[in-house]
Length: 394
Ligand SMILES: Cc1cc2nc3c(=O)[nH]c(=O)nc-3n(C[C@H](O)[C@H](O)[C@H](O)COP(=O)(O)OP(=O)(O)OC[C@H]3O[C@@H](n4cnc5c(N)ncnc54)[C@H](O)[C@@H]3O)c2cc1C
Image (cartoon, rainbow, N blue to C red):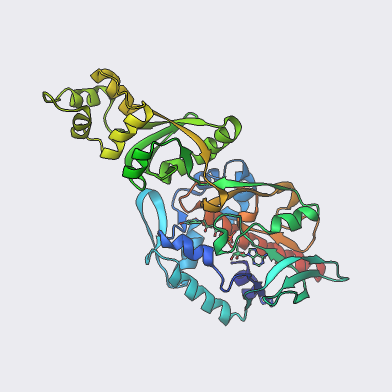
C-alpha cells in the first residue's frame, strides 16, 4: 500500500520480500473470507485499538473504511457488508484483489524483488543504507534509498513470511520493541480425552461470553486443546492478559442467550419420565457439544435440580489455562513502541525509516480492524515519506 501511494506520487519504489511471492499472509487471510474492514462509525472503529487508538486515529481518519472500500472497488473488487457490519470483497477472497493490485504496481513501475531478505542497515553518507541478502547464501548487497518503509508484519503464521526476525535487528539498533504476544489466539482448556474425541472442531453456536465485565454474543469453536475463534477472540486480549498474569482465567459462557434462567428451567421442566438429562437438555435447545461442555466443567456431576441446571446453562464457568502459540494466532500484539515513532510513523532514532502495519505496538479484535490499521498506517507513512523528502529537498 505504501509502495502504491509513493509510486503514484512519482517515487521510484522497490519492494523487497524474502518469500518467493508477495502478500502470502494477505492470501491466507482471504482463505476464510477476506474481512477488509468494518462499517461502524470511525470513532467506534478507532476505539477497537484500545490504548493505541489515539496514535492510530489520525491515520485511520484520513484513510478510513470508506476509503479502503473505494480503493478495493478501484481494483475491480466491489465490497459488501456481511454479518455485524464486516466488509468483504464480493469474491470473498484475496486472490483477485492481490492480482489486480500487482498489475497496478507493475503499471506504476514498482520493482518487486522476491527471495531477498532485509537484514539491517548500513551507515552511508547520504540516505538510508539497506542491507539485503539474496537467495544465494552470502550474496549480501547494500542498496541506498532516500527513505525506507518497514512493513515486515508481526510473528504469527511465520510460514507465510512474517517471522519477527526484525525484532532483533531493531532492538540491537536501540529501538524499543514491546514483546510480541499472541492476539486473536486460541486458549487451552483441560478437556478430557472423550470430549476432544467427540467435539474437537465443533462450533459453539449462539453463545454469549462474559469476561472482565464485558459480554459478547457470537460463536466459538472447540479445539483439540481448548477453544478459539469468534467470542474468544473478541474478549481475547483481556483473557490473555489474565492467563499470562495468573496462569488461568475463568470465562463464563451462556449457552442459551435468548432465554432467561426461568425460561430454560421451564423448558427443562417439560422433561419426560425416564429421560436422561442429556436428552432433556437437547430438547431444551442445547447442541450435543453444549451438553457435553456442562459435563466437562462439572466433572460429570450435573446439578440434580432443574433450577441449578438452568443456572449452569446460563453461566458455564470455563477455566482456560494457557494461550495457543503466537505462531498459530491470527495477529500479534506488541511491536515497535509508540515512543519510537513520530506522527509520520518515522523512527525517531533512524530518520528516513518508517514503520507500518502489525510491526507497530497495537492490537485489535478480528472484524477487519487488522487490515484497516495496516493499510491506514501504510498510507500515512507514505505521506510521511513524501513530507520528509520534501523537507530535505524543498
Ligand atoms: C489466518 C489469518 C486470517 C486473517 N484474516 C484477516 C481478516 O479477515 N481481516 C483482517 O483485517 N485481518 C486478517 N488477518 C490479519 C492480517 O492478515 C494482518 O494483520 C496483515 O496481513 C498485517 O499486514 P502487514 O503488512 O503488517 O504484515 P504481513 O501481511 O505479515 O506482511 C509482512 C511481509 O513482510 C515480509 N517479510 C518479513 N520479514 C522480512 C524481511 N526481513 N525481509 C523481507 N521481507 C520480509 C513477509 O514475508 C510478509 O510478506 C488474518 C491473519 C491470519 C493469520
